[in-house]
Image (tube, rainbow, N blue to C red):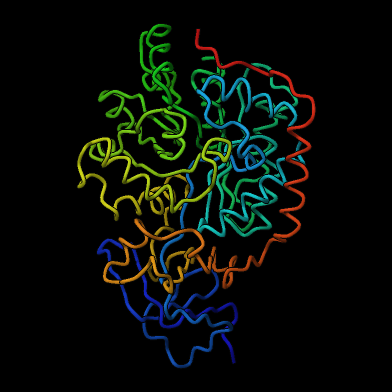
Length: 445
């Protein structure tokens, strides 16, 4: 009689990313419920309810996208090749003035389909109308850590909610979807939020026992403006306000000093590098090797499709290592395995899913299978190198999250992809073709 809720992946190569960096060849993975029960020889009395033929496939931990704005799929290709101030003022914040809850829902559906197809098992989202995103996460089977972006300067309809309603969202969805959804508070940034508001948000996060997700030290002008206005860097400014005393996911952290790095390590802040966006917007380079050397937890993110323009974590992983090598003029900086751990374990820790990011007995069944029957993935004498430097999103053939198969032999199992493509296309064109208005300005003066 089949063991209920069991899944056997048979004869598969495995990139474990455990402490020993073990690579296993032609082995078995038995999943029971939402956990990996056995790796290796499966007891003969076990009769799995589902079997996947893993031959010519590589199993590895799924990706955790630690900073994105999922519903910005609607703004893909809408704001290219512009400096940051014009990117925000003339395109992004203007387009978001026309944003509705329904837009966010279908933009998030489109993002979920893209992320699953690319091997992402969890994402950390920072946007608006987040109840809609939470519902998409619930249906899709993904994991997510969700923050409703707030500015503290009189939120308008384009963001949907102020802090009290955002707190309600945090309480409403914390631990939902059998624990796959976590919530945090999302003040936009130290340059866009007043100081008293940042203090209030930090206090509320302590009362709610949740963390924060924000943007930090993205551009040189933000560093210069903070020094001129406050006499301190953006990192020191947030620390002095008590914000970094809370568990914080800080996206970007490009324009930071050695003293900032030590402070981020002391506060145990999670830093997220988004290399594709950093290059496309000419932002600079997050000092990842220096952060890691100081003991800072670093993760990778795609940022939103309005700047990236995709949600491809394999691409981010490759760019993360190549960008650091080029910037430091050193081919040994941030080797492939380190980059892959940032894309898996680093994100899992930042998002509060620290048990994920490794294939081991007793761990959550959050893993993906790559089809190795591709010319660019041969020869197979270094599977880890092939993943980081050669693999592409279409190579992902299976995605399993919390024991549930979300992508089966290249087909989405939880989402209606055809309808998503239709609705997203229709609504995106409606949004960008209707009246828009300036809702705020990126102005550091």
